[in-house]
Image (tube, rainbow, N blue to C red; front, side):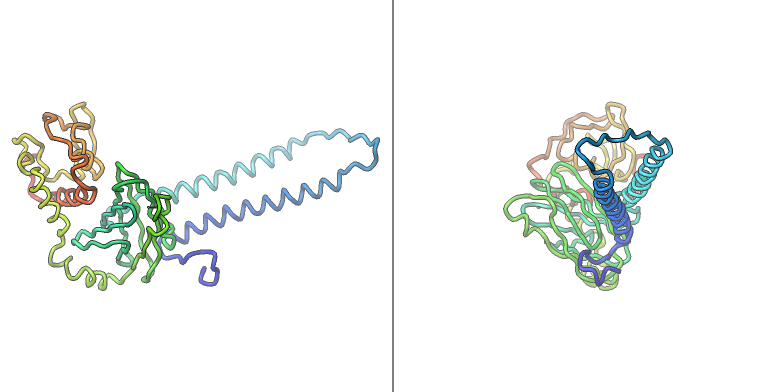
Length: 317
Ligand code: CUA
């Protein structure tokens, strides 16, 4: 639709057309009212101009019908914007459950992408067409923002927490990706490309790695898990000094302060960097914090490993 209009980037994701439709609606409404108001200003300025030095203006009686009309119409327009915008926001915000996971770290001044099959790339992201992709993003330093105009998605990547972003590409091709948050000298150069491929080509690009070792990133995480000594306390059963991590990901966790939460990426990351923040019920806060001793990339790899323990037999339920 926009091929001949140079004002818009290509529409290459499932939400692109909807985002554009909402945007055009907002632009349309604003343009209409701007023109209406400007024309009325001119029209009234001429119509009700002062005709002589001693002219007294006639008193104007209010009109309830008119007042109601220009209250109800803007109200309805605002509600349309609100409901339309909110539903699109939620759709855009919640990744589908079966999405392909890719981990992202932003640092001055590059984007690093890590596929679960082990492939790692910098400033280039290869994804399959027609499949939802979920990016879990961390920053090693300052605030960055990942922006892919052709997909109409953008999300800040903030130090100290994970943010997620998802999209489903609808067309193969190469698209721009940018950092959209000023992050220092080389900010303008912190960009790259998204390469959308046919699923078969994507598998090929993974180098058959996906078939040979679907959990290569988890394997890297396992290596770190041993290297950092996590395995000395986190044994597969709950009789050890530390909670078992088997089947932990996505499960409910009971905390010491009687709160419950779901063990997601954010919670596991916090438990590695600052374990004392939320201690699991029945355990002592004896784990040392790893803040400053481990990179965000390594944390993501360890999370991939802990996720892979999901399907293992659970020793303690
Ligand atoms: Cu990273 Cu701007």
